[in-house]
Amino acid sequence: MLVSATSHDRSAMEKSDMAGLELGMSVDEMGHFIQDALGEMAEAVLTRTKVSGVFLSGGDTAIGFFQRMKLSGCKINEEIMVGIPSMTIVGGKSDGLKLITKAGAFGTPDAIFFAMRKLKEY
Image 1 (cartoon, rainbow, N blue to C red):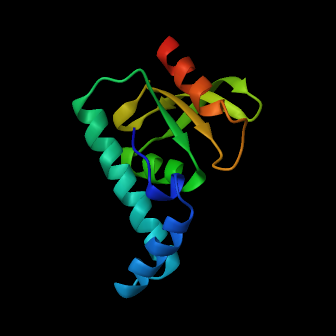
Image 2: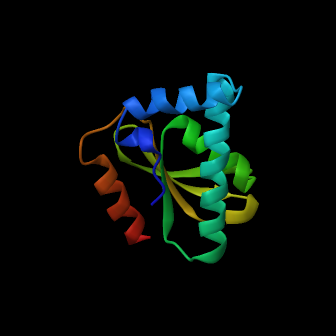
C-alpha cells in the first residue's frame, strides 16, 4: 500500500507545500512531483510483484499512475459502490490488470475496505 502523508494528516499538506516552496517549486509543481513519485513507486511494485489489482484514491494519484504506466485507457466492468467503478486496464505496462478508483473525498467510511475485498475476488 502506497499512501502519502496527507492521507492521514491534512496538516502534512501545508508542510509539503512549504518544503516545495523552499526548493523553489510552486504548489502545482509540488503536486506534480508527488504524482510522479507515487507513480514511480507503483510502477516499481507492479514490475516486481504479481497483484490481483490496484486501488487508487484521488484524481492526482490516478493521473500519476496512468501517466507512469502509459495506459491507453480503461474498460469499466461494474460499479462496485455508487460512483466507484471497477475497471480493467487497457494497454500499457499493466494491460489486463483490474483497477478500482475512488475520488479522494468521496464514498462511505468502508469504501476502501470494500474495494480491497473486491480486488481480492478477481
